[in-house]
Length: 197
Image 1: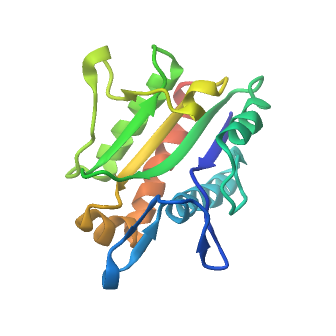
Image 2 (image 1 turned 180 degrees about the vertical axis):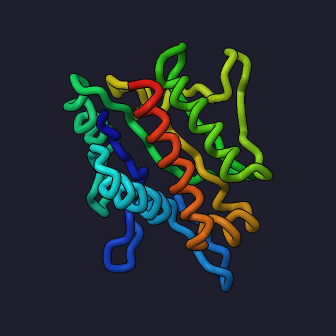
C-alpha cells in the first residue's frame, strides 16, 4: 500500500506565506498559517512512515502553492497501485473539533474516513467529531476537487479550527497537540493498511 500525502495550500518561503488567506492572526498571541500547519503534520507522518517502512508519496513537497490540478495529476499516476489519498487541512469559520470529507457515494473512502473518525476520538475523546450520518457513516460528503478527481480512495481531513482560540493555543500551535494529530493520522494509515488493503 502507498499513502499519497497532500499537505494542503502553500507554505512559507523566506517568511512570506504563499496562499492568500488560509491563516489566522491572533495579534500578540501569534499567527497560524494553514499551509505551514499542514506541512508540519505531513512531515511528521513522513518521519514515522519512513521508520515503519510504509510506502508514501509526498504529493506537494514544494513550499509554493501547488495547483489542485497538479496535485491530482501527480496522485493519479499511482492509480494502478494499492493506494489512498490523504489531504491534510485545518479548519476555519467558527467551530471546534475535527471532520473528514469524502466524495459522494459509498466507496472505500467512506471506510477510511470511518477509521479516521475512530482514531480521532481515541486521541481526543473530549473534542467534538463533526459528523453527518445521513448516509449511514460519519464522514461528510463534498465535491472538493482533490477528492472528486483522484482515481483512488481519498479523504480530506479538517483538524481543528484556526479561529477557535482554545484550539489554536492548546492544539494547533503546540508540539504536543500537533503530535497527537500526527498520531491519529498514523493510526488511521496503519489500520487502513491492515484492514482494507
